[in-house]
Image 1 (cartoon, rainbow over the protein chains, first blue to last red):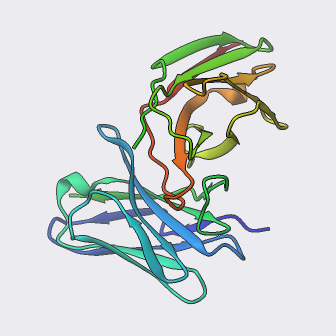
Image 2: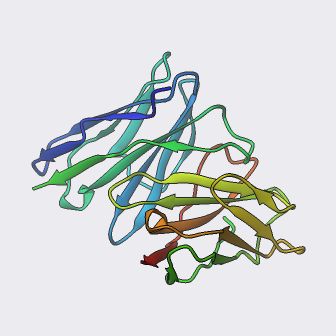
Amino acid sequence: KAGVTQTPRYLIKTRGQQVTLSCSPISGHRSVSWYQQTPGQGLQFLFEYFSETQRNKGNFPGRFSGRQFSNSRSEMNVSTLELGDSALYLCASSLESGRGNTEAFFGQGTRLTVV
Amino acid sequence: DAKTTQPNSMESNEEEPVHLPCNHSTISGTDYIHWYRQLPSQGPEYVIHGLTSNVNNRMASLAIAEDRKSSTLILHRATLRDAAVYYCILRDRNAGNMLTFGGGTRLMVKP
């Protein structure tokens, strides 16, 4: 069974640009969550999508957005990039919307560097 | 969200048991206790979870205090591959799949 696939693995962008990251969950998983990991703030939750609907949202500015397609694949977009957006962006997929007792499977992440 | 408290780092010798503690004194009745670990240069990996009773799986054991205000992740025989950051997370059964990570415990394993 294929794991969670994130593309691209590495990305370099310039301040002010926008970026789109992609995540393909494990087959059959309908929940996709996104996280940002930085040395200073650690792992922070961005948002969760389940069946194309955003279920939860973390405390991030509106420049961070996402969506989920009917095949459960998800994309996240960051507009007007800032230097502080440099981070490892991780995607996690889960089988269902979650009752607290399901495990999340993480991808290897996309390393975004903003220069 | 209910918070967890873990030591910043711990050290262990290879092939010895490791007990990783976690305090969660504000845990609510709807919170599951989850453990994830993150190996260097990888995404987090699920280890184990429980609600009230102790749990065992092929990776580890989870011992939960009777009052649920603390728990301990037990690695029965540490290997070099177990060197990672271990996160103890409380998951509200009513909050979807959101995981709130704290600082975790960095486990170092000495050969």
